[in-house]
Image 1 (cartoon, rainbow, N blue to C red):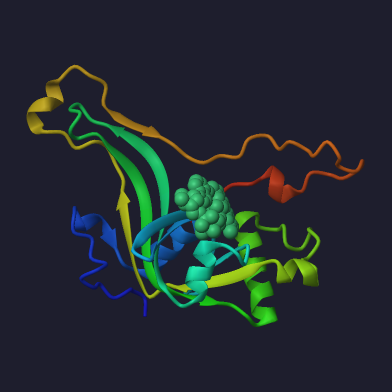
Image 2: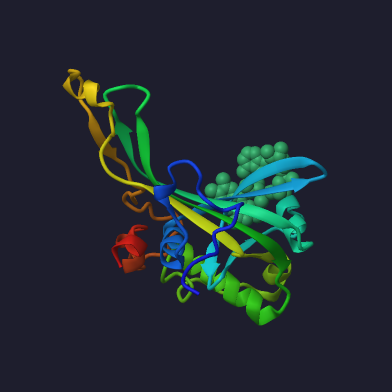
Amino acid sequence: MAEFPVTDRTRVRQVPRRGAYDKETVYRILDEGLICHVGFVEDGQPFVMPTLYARLEHRLVLHGSPGSRMLRHLAAGNRACVTVTLVDGLVLARSVFHHSVNYRSVVVLGAGRLVTAEAERLRALERLTEHIVPGRWSDARRPSAEEMRATAVVEVSIDEASAKVRTGPPVDDEEDYTFAVWAGVLPLEEVALAPLADPRLRAGIALPRYVRDYDRRRARAE
Ligand SMILES: Cc1cc2nc3c(=O)[nH]c(=O)nc-3n(C[C@H](O)[C@H](O)[C@H](O)COP(=O)(O)OP(=O)(O)OC[C@H]3O[C@@H](n4cnc5c(N)ncnc54)[C@H](O)[C@@H]3O)c2cc1C
């Protein structure tokens, strides 16, 4: 199946032409994003928590303290809404009303599950590490048995998903195109700055290429 089913809950209603439901678009955005926001309702109280994540095939994996409210809630099999947002630019129109943002975003609806099998937990942690810094898993020390016990791994199935993407210049009212104000797009992107070596770094350790060349846009460029 190359497309997520469009349901009443996932159909993009405002500017529907910006909606996309194909797995390629949805997965590319999920693979480029760094953090997600996990929305869930506990005892009638909604929470929306920022957290790291990674996509592992048709699910999202999350990790953290076993005491985490969010992870405990998901581990119990409850449903969640997970969003990922990439901001590509500020769209400055001639009128305030038509100002906008170029973005790519995904909303996922799915159910939580506690990952318990040790090999599966390790694979999820590898995927998380590689999602954040590709190349790091094979360099850093692997988790000890004690560290594994102190880490909860939870996944959220990508049952329903939609993407919404805005690109391009502002769209002004026709009569405003003669208005004497600058209009256009101010592109924005998440870029890595120069790495700061740990003051306690052992002498003689070179900067890894995956740090030097870190670039989250790789999923877009591929
Ligand atoms: C960029 C980023 C990445 C993160 N990655 C992870 C991760 O991979 N794993 C992980 O377990 N946690 C991560 N966190 C921390 C996460 O947001 C939660 O603080 C943590 O998971 C505890 O969640 P909880 O459900 O137990 O919240 P609780 O401790 O139950 O918190 C609920 C209350 O505390 C407030 N609160 C909790 N967290 C935050 C926060 N981050 N900012 C402001 N208010 C907060 C809530 O608003 C709420 O009122 C990350 C946070 C950020 C900002």
